[in-house]
Amino acid sequence: MLKHSLFGFRLCQVVFLSLLIAPLVAAGADEMNSTDISGSIFQNQEFNFQFLRTIGYTASGGADINECLDTAFRIKDGDAESWYGQWNRTAARLESTAEEFLASGHKISAKEAFLRASNYYRNAGFYLDINPDDPRIVSTWEKSHDCFIKAANLSSGLIRPVRIPFQNTTLPGYLCLVDGNGTSRPTLIVHTGFDGTGEELYFGVAKFAIDRGYNVLIFEGPGQGEMIRVQGMPFRPDWEAAVTPVIDFAQNLSEVDPDRIALMGISFGGYLAPRAAAFDHRIAACIANGGVYDFNASVMQKALPNMEEILSDENASREFDQEMSEYMKQSIETGWAVEHGMIVFGAQTPSEYFRMIAPYTLKDVAGLIRCPTLVVDSDNDTLLAGQARPLYDALTGPKEYLLFTTEEGAGLHCQMGAPTISNERIFNWLDGVLQEG
Image (cartoon, rainbow, N blue to C red; front, top):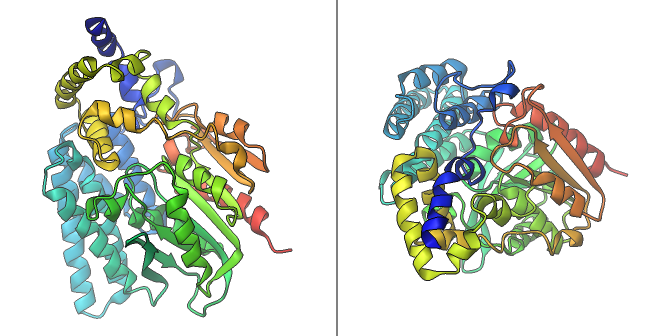
C-alpha cells in the first residue's frame, strides 16, 4: 500500500509543485499570449515570478527598473546561491549609497535608496529557507528591516514604527500617515501571508492607500517577518487572536476613524483576514487578495489524493518524509516551499507540516462574516487557484468578486508585477464602501 502511495507521489510531483506553494507562472502552450513571462528573464519560472514581485515595486519606490534588470542578468538561472549573492550585492551597494547621501545632507535621496535596499535585501533572502540553519536568514532579514527603519526615520514622521501589545509580547508594525496633523481618517489595517514582510507591504499596498487619503496600519502576526524570524512564533489558525489586539491599538490612535477600519490580507492572508473578520465585527470592510476558502484542500488534497491515508499511518508518514526530503534536494521550488512551510508553521517534518494546515479552512466560519467583503482572484494564479470563488460563494453578507486577468497584465498571484492596476480597482471598491454618509 505504501509503495503504491509513493509511486502516486512521484507521478504527482508536477501537480504538487504547482498546487502546493511554489507560485509558478508558466502557462500551457495553448494559453500563451503576449503578457506571459515564460522565459522573459529566467527559464526558471519561480525566479521570474520573484523577479516580477521585486521590480513591480518600482511604482511605489521599492525598486528601479535597470537596477533590477542589471541584477537579474548577473544571476545564474535556477541557482539559489547566485540569486542571494547578486541581490545582496545590489542591496549592499544601495545601502552604502544611502549612507553617503545621508552624510552629505541629501535626506530625500537617502530615504529613496534605503527603501530600495530594503526591498532588494528582502528578495535576496527569499530562497535561504532551503537551508533552515543558514545564519544569513535572520541577518538578511535584519538588513531589510533596518534599511526600512532608516527610511522611516527620514519620512518626517509619516512612517512610524509601532509595537502592538499581544499576549506577553508585541507585534511589530508601521503606522503610515497621509499627513502629520493627527486628522482622523479611514484606516486600512493590512498584513501579509505565507512569506511576505511588513516592510514589503509598504510598497505593495500602503503607498497606494496613502495617496488616496487612507492612513495605514501594517502589522506582522505569528508566522510572519519578525514574529517567526526573531520571536519564533508560528502561524495560528485563529487569526482573530492577532487582529483583535491590533484593532484595539488602532482605535486608540487619533489618526484612526474607529468606524472606518478596513482589513486586508495578502496571499495566504486571504484566509487569515476573512477568518478575523468572522469574529471581530468592528471591521468595516474586508479584502482578501486572493481569497482562500480552504488552504488545506488547496495544498494537500489536490497534491495527492491519498494524502490523508499517508498522514494517518506512522510508517507511511516516515517513508513519505524520506521520499520528500530527497526530492526537496533536487527541486529549488519544492525545497523552498516545504522548508519555509515547516519553519513558519513550526513543523519538524513535511508530514507534520501537512497535518498542521488542516484547521486552515473557512468552511465553518465564512457565514459569520458580516462586513462588506471583496474577494480578489487572478486568472493565472497558479498558487491558490480555485480558492477565491468558493470563498465568495460561502459569504452571506455584502460581497463582491474581483477578477484580474492576464490580458490586462495583472493575472498572476496577487497581481504581482502590477501593483498599480491592482490597487486602482481594489481602492475604488473600498472608497465606495467606506465613503462618509
